[in-house]
View 1: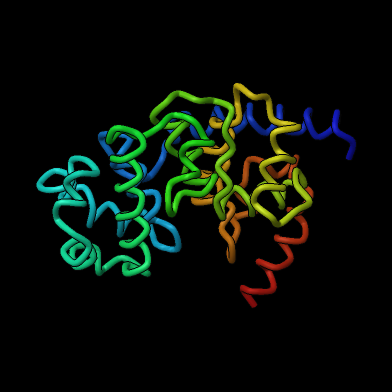
View 2: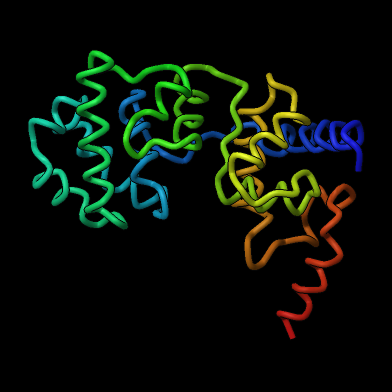
Length: 224
C-alpha cells in the first residue's frame, strides 16, 4: 500500500476504535507524573496488575517524590519491590533516575522526550507514556507489545525495531491522534487481538484487517 492508502486505513481504523473504546486509558494507577514515571519503568517485562498491587500503597505511605526514595535507600526500596520482575536492576535504575531528578530537574519530572530519555531506565516508550498522560502531549506513539502486534497485523508497519515503528506510524497517523491511537490500539490488543489466540471472528476490524484469514485459519487449526 502507498502512503495515501495507509493514511486512509488509519483513518478508518481510528473511527472504529474511537467508537468501541471510548474510555481507553493507561492501565497503571497513578496520581502524579512521578508515580507514573516510576511505575512505567517498573512495568517493563512485568504486568500492570502486579505494579498496581505493589506501588500505589508505597506511593501513598512512603514514596511521594524522588527524595523519599533516595532517603529510604536502595536496600529498602529493593526489598519493597522484590515481587516485581528484575527488581534488582530496576531498583538501581530508579535510584539513578531519582538522583538525576533531584540534581538536574529540581525534583520534578521534566516535560520533554529529550529530557525524559536522559533519565536512567527511561526509554522512548516510558517517556511517551508520561508525556501523553501527564503533559497532554498528543503527538506521541507508545510502542508497546500490543501496539507492535496489532499495527503489524493491520498492515500499518513493516519494521520490528520500536524506533522505526514509531517513525512509520508518525508518518501515517495524524499528530493530534497519535497518543489516542496508541491507547486504542493497545486496548484492542488486550481485548480482541491477543498474541496467541486473536478473536478474529468477533473482531470489528475484520473488513479492514489483511491478517484476518490467516489468523482465522490458525484459530481453527488450534481448536482441532
